[in-house]
Image (tube, rainbow, N blue to C red; front, side, top):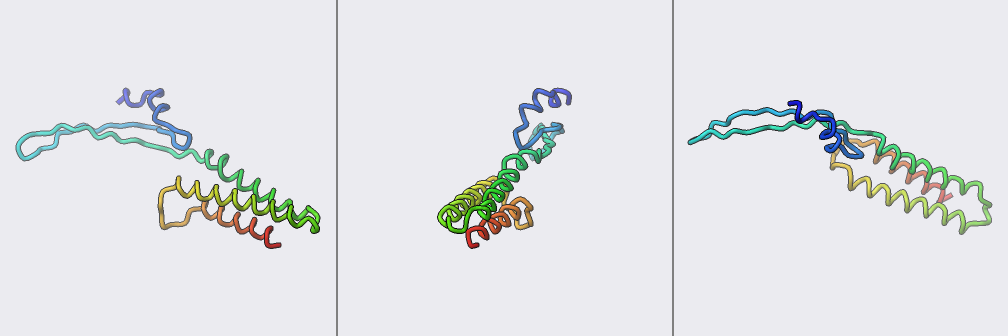
Length: 130
């Protein structure tokens, strides 16, 4: 039991997104038809680190919205500059949303992160249309 909960092993089992907090084992013997089969079940307890998504997805999304809305302070006569700023922000958000969608597990339920990205794309699209 103490072998598996060595701090160095737990650190090695962790990543930027997940922290391994506990590894436990269950030993037993499975009674087969002709002979016994010993086995070991390992149970990993993982905790998600929300800081990774905050620093790599949420903060850049907010920065891109602020940058796109800064086009309201550019002269209305400079249409190409305003449109270019909006399109670049929209394409960047679209790329960020697709990379996040690839990383997240597939689910039918509501995910706040994808909802934030979709709403952000709407805000940026509004600056292009305006």
